[in-house]
Image (cartoon, rainbow, N blue to C red; front, side):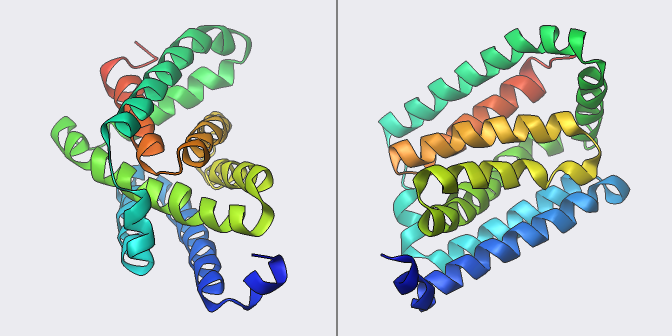
Length: 214
């Protein structure tokens, strides 16, 4: 579909409007995270936007979110590899950039705001919502508009930039790197399942099971 035809397609315009609105709402939620807490602000945005994306996109979203054994295994393998790389690189990076350790401690403090039981129950639906929004709606709209390479990179860049209001540049850089990895999984597999599983595994390993500050 050419850019001119795409611009006149009501479905494409709807999808791009949904992507733009999702990014704006996500930015507002991140800005509200300091006064009301990350879980309440960003978690609620992920759940609401994810549900809206699934409802609006309908069959198209269900088609790319259908799980299978190979897709789950691919995502789990990439998630474990990313978690291992995070643990291997963190000590060296923190040694040469002390602000990284400060930002990491702030992230863990925000993550541990609710009780462990609440966090354990919330992490799966929040990540599902986040992936439906970012690798589902935003990634698809940008790739359709700008092509695979530019669209993938633009989605990862925006995914990182919207976290800057938290005042933790390390988190924005980590989101950029993870966004690139999960976007590549999305494009390479043609499915949302591998990035979703990789995202979940990385969060559970790095934030819960084997925290960096430990």
